[in-house]
Image (tube, rainbow, N blue to C red; front, top):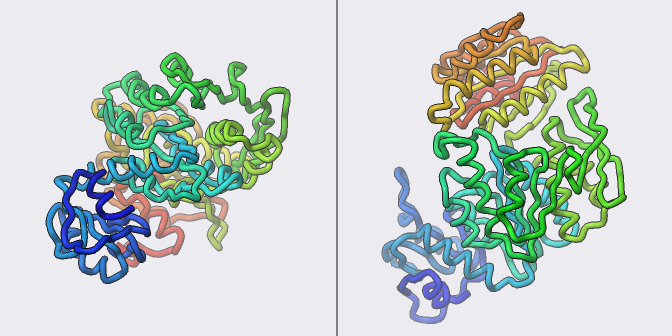
Length: 464
């Protein structure tokens, strides 16, 4: 696009561009990532002002700068860069009529399923599905702007912290295929109830065109009910008899990896997953629904599901230490639903080989009035699953131990760690070769524990 075109679609004004300027590269808001011909977007952050790096970006090859004030570089000045980025992304999607846009949402499993979709759809043609959770008002348009004329599939993860958020994202890039994985307690403090969460998540299927496809989890009643909210073709997936794409005969191996019989339309095939966790069955069924809708042959879907892996970091990342300890690093984020899934995976991995289990659990944010009960519920489940050592990290996670204590008959050990450093000392101070350790929390540096286990380093040695 020319800089004049960018100014027109963003509602900005052209500056320092006496001759025509064409943006031929990608859009970046980190000056260290700008490539030749790119557009650098300058945001005013709390600690760093991107405008200070405009010159550095242009020197690195950027063709222009999108900013809220004149930086002295060729660019477009706008009132508000986040909205301008959204308008630019919308304009780009309209220029790519051959693009199939896939949007997915859910209380848990979004990023992992997005990773699977990128791998499956990539077999049909060039696909954009970047690693990480780029699912908000910044990450969403940023992902859209990675699409080019060669891109066939654009996979967009959609997060929400309140009503209208997903609707706003669909207005930037309207999905052709929409996926709703589940409705749980994530961000329940913002939505008020799981019903409120369901109303917000359903904004995705409401945005689908009549010729689109809504891939819905038939095993979640709140998701299945969204069929009434869309004019698109509804494709239920799950383990229930109502699913058109169904998994049956689910079994777990000693590493907690599921295999199942995938069936649809009279076809059936055995899927053997290479990723741990019973919950991956639901995630891969959703991915299968999208791939089949996009035209992938059934046998190819069966084979591809057995080869997918997790691309984004700290999401059910299982590694084995030289001393034999197995670590499940699921520390990127946490809510009651995702923590329950991780605990079940921990129990399944240990059950087959009778190994000792340790769960290091941190605070789960944005639960509102359900904060205490949500943490207690997780603790109770850990006890019911027979976790041997339950470590709650930081004061706001202490109710996890209270929940475990109220589960009758639990003989495990409840341990409170005031901070990450203390948790590391506790875990490393009593490791056994036959142990499986889960690390899970909501972005409060619980991943320090996982990093210490990966490197077998004490707190003072862990990189801040």
